[in-house]
Image (cartoon, rainbow, N blue to C red; front, top):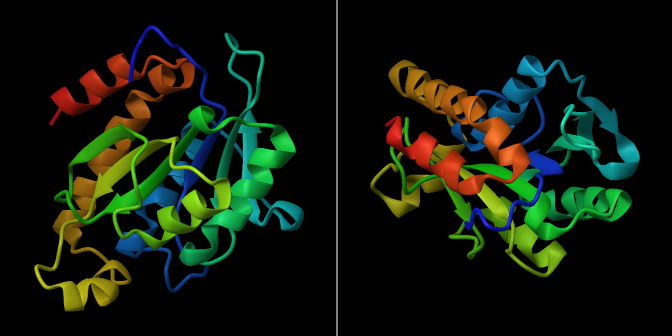
Length: 199
């Protein structure tokens, strides 16, 4: 994440599953992040059937291009269709995208920024990489912990976090929102440094 290449952020995607039964589950913490951004920046996320997503946008004073916030309206393992549709419609390049998602590798309360890489077994990322033909986009990795048994992962991610874990996850989301202006301006080094040092 070199600060010498300051490219503005134009699309933030929050991954999750649709429907009330999934809204509070661990797998939806990426969507929680986008919901929080929408609340802070007063963006109205509306269903766009043609783009298969809940979508809203804002214009920051120092940037000419609009920044789009989206939550795919289909299930997690079909996220690629929505992301590809929005990317093509608004002509967004991969390095102008941030995907927020749950991460089993980190404990609740841990949040990490990363550029590029594979899907790490995450079905949403897997489908997005397949649809876009590359994984060269930014990721906001929100820790949800691990059940310690691979056989329990599917049920774990689709269940609600404990009250204490949810407090930690919400705190991580709030910290990510606090450094969001640096992400938008493309100052990824500063955003990463400030985000990671707060833990």
